[in-house]
Image 1 (tube, rainbow, N blue to C red):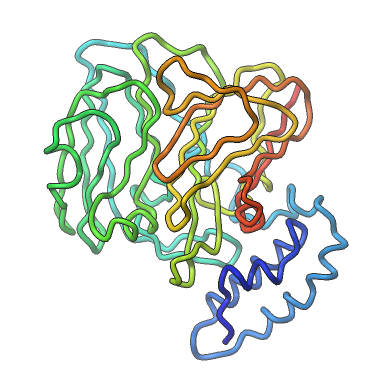
Image 2: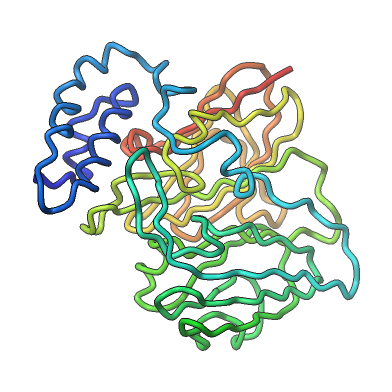
Length: 338
């Protein structure tokens, strides 16, 4: 059976329009098994010239090669509401590490290590000054930890206290500083534990509340499905083309706040580009520095807050500005309504 590497997939697919067939072909090749030859993959590759005639309209709505229903990723897209500052409050959470097989593209399954059965893991949110208390239960097959970006004692850092399968550990520290952070496993080999899916978004709201907004979380990530150290698929929130199939609905003129983070392994950078409008960008969601742009780049573990007020109605594309990332799954749309 031919090996469907990222290079071969890209060489055999046309930008955007042919991607559905390319993804389906790779899914079959990835899952056919070593015992047989998958002729359907070759048939799909041979049909790419026909797919070119479909045009870009095939990549929105039902034509987009995404897995699942319209609300499947709501818990990863929409963060819990911010809470006002309250001295002495405990912000309690439970994260459970499990081994899960997740479908990242139609017919393409990935053997993931997860927090609470999703990649990325659940959004952890607290307010500056809360006592953050996270009970971590390791129900997976390997030792794991949780490393929170932020300020905390070193014995709560997720480096010195590996949690073996069947055990648990409670992380407890004051939530600080205010901003947008990430969390991830810090067990070795580190790149494997992150790439397999053990990461998520971590929001600490300031004591003085931000302006009310429609809030969204987008975690950029990638998946190496053939074990060659290169990602074959790129996503936000874990599924290819999901927000192309189900555009994110917002309203013209309302403040839209996007918490954007990059946990892509094997690539030095990832990026976010918005079509037909500009946004304000605040690195890590802290400080007084804001950029005004339509494109930002992030290395692994980097994050920031985007604030947008759409000036027009319509369908606005967003995607990675590395073209191959877009063609391999990392793109979507905002549907701006009156």
